[in-house]
Each structure stands twice: as C-alpha cells, then as structure tokens.
Image: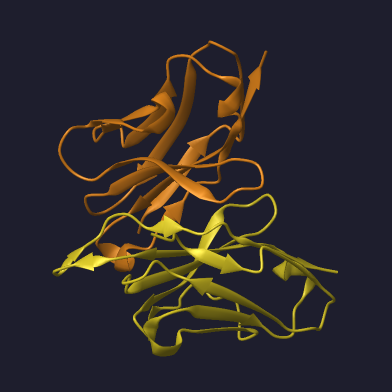
Length: 114
Length: 117
C-alpha cells in the first residue's frame, strides 16, 4: 500500500525566505512522486515529478524537490518565497500498484508574509 | 490542446436531490480518474476508468454514487440522492498509456465544487 504524510498543515514564511514543505511517503514498490499546487479558486497544477533518474527534480516557479530513498522523503523547497507562492501544496505518490492512481497527502497551505 | 474540463464549476443542491458532474478528459487519454476532497481532508481516489471499463472503483463511498464513461470519452459522476456529507470538490484527471508504458503523469481538471444544503 502507498501513503503520503505531509508535515504541517500550515506553513508561514516571510517574502524572500526559504520555503521548505515536508513530505514522507510509504510505498512497497518504486514510487513516482509528485508535488501539485492549488492556487485559490483554481485546479490542481503539477509543480514537479520524480519518476526515475536524477533524484533532484526541478519544477516550475523555482521549486525543486529531492527524492531521498533512504529517508523515504520528497521535500519541496524554494530558495526565496514570493507573495504569489501563497497556495496549497499537495505531495502525492503513484506506482505500479493500484493502476497508477494518485495517493495524496493532506496538503500544506503556504502563507507568505510581506 | 484543451486540458481536462469539468462541468459545472460549482453546484449547490438540496439534500435528496440528484446532481451529475461531467468530465471531458484530454483527447486520446484512455485513463480517467475521479477524486474528491471533502472540506478539510485529503484528496481521495474514487475510481479509475480505462476507456469505458471501470478498472478500480474501490474508492466509491457508497451506492449513491454512479460513474459512467460512455464510449470511452467523457465521464459522468452522478450522486443520487445527495447527502450533506457529499459536499466537497470533485476532481477529474486523465492520463495516457503510450505503447504499453503507463504514463506517469495525470492531468487534473479545475474541479467541481459541490455544496449540498
């Protein structure tokens, strides 16, 4: 079975500060890992994904995430937060089990202070 | 190319009524998924179609929910009769298998916000 745990339902940072959103997963097979973002009144947008290969994945809007198998983690980072980054972020996992359905974490709402 | 489209974007209905949500996947995508996010909780899988066949409906909450995918194109999700706890955002996603290699990315629609009063 696969599962995702996002640490912290709310994270608040100052504009220009480092953004770190934590995600740990559980999977009995090699996972595919994703970060999605949902801006207010919009749908889910893929930020980045890890499938195979390089463990450091770069996504849109300056975000990146590193797949660490030993820690079963896929934390999302951005060096400098911008006001426009305020949104809800979802870590997700899928894989060969379960027909590639996506299992989501509970979400982390990011607040950016001026 | 159009993305995944969901109709309506919002729906407010009374308890006991029927509502039908529609999802138009990306053209050529055989896989279609429905998900739901109830207020304050995580996004949960409902079911998965491969073309017109239900591959996995393990996430459907009860028999008040009926999903169809006529001809393997668009899909509908009907809730009948609706209950208060059905309120939430319903997402649809689609993905494409390429030559037997399952695509790793699902594209999501904007979601339908359902409110049952």
